[in-house]
Length: 493
Image (tube, rainbow, N blue to C red; front, top):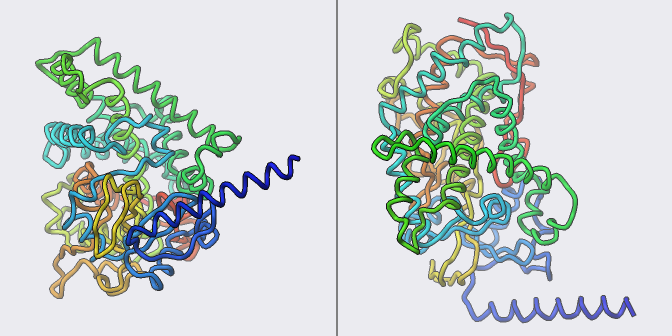
């Protein structure tokens, strides 16, 4: 009897799948490989490097193709021209953000990250305005970054290391970068020895690493199944709950000490706006959106930038000639007696080119955050039905053979013209493009430049195993490209 029940259930599922696919044929969907019931095209995808599969499939099905991740329909946009046409030329059509299960559970569906419609519009406008008011992309923020690296613990940590002693810089870089966003959001920095701060950063790192692993990919495809199973995702969510509890405490502290005439940070500004709209029943400035937006900023403002700096050090240890050329340029232009500023960037074309190439080559978020068709979208003669996830395949942009001379090699010359001057290139889109591009782009650019130039002013970096021991292929590569960790030796100049 149990066998027949199982067989009947399998038959019903198969019929539902069949009629679902038949119904989709009424749309002119982009082409793609035939999916299997329930699991879709998953058997065809390399779970350790799905970007390779996407590139191969696009050779057969073109720059706009349909895949099924489990029973989720996904349209993938491949190459610079396609991504730009969607996100920039048809920006209004592609403002939707997919409800990625892992992110949805972490934020409860609130905040700026995966919201849509009026909630997203209001929160994005408010967040950009507020962060700019507190100096993001301006001189004030530059001074915060300079203070964190030049006058606080980072350089001191390097200087007090025993000569030649290798160490893993991952946690140190995470603390330093996080303190910058903490100043913006919480109005304070934290001691590098603060155990709670260390635990929070560890939870963020575990969240990104898990979400970028094959297990994380399975969770996002089959969340209802994975929720019922034991596994690493349970401890990762426990860590996210600890971060949420920490943010709740900070919000309460801000409420108790708030001076509406003198806001100190992002939380203060949000609380003031919430009070102004307290009588508006449809306001988006309420507690849940505050909590989840702070979580978005705290997490994104910590891990992606610190991972990029760590990857840059790996690149420089592997390519000693590039490191030496950068240090020669930095020493000639700035010397060693002052902290670098963003004003110096135009006088450091090779250094600027290397930093851009690090971002291009790392390709930190290869699939971007998935977009979402909030309504049927007409695109390149196809129809993307409402409810379809859309992946602007950033890896295919940053490695587009039509846009880059040597897309799969590390080559700073990509960003230098014939006269050795820095040149901007339209296909440089590590922060995505259009109306859902990263809100922290200007802050990240500033951090990368000042942190790396400051470190190279004072130290030569090497690896105990030598350049050949360094593998620049990421350790994990799905949601994000997570660089491998290496011990480094920082030798004072």
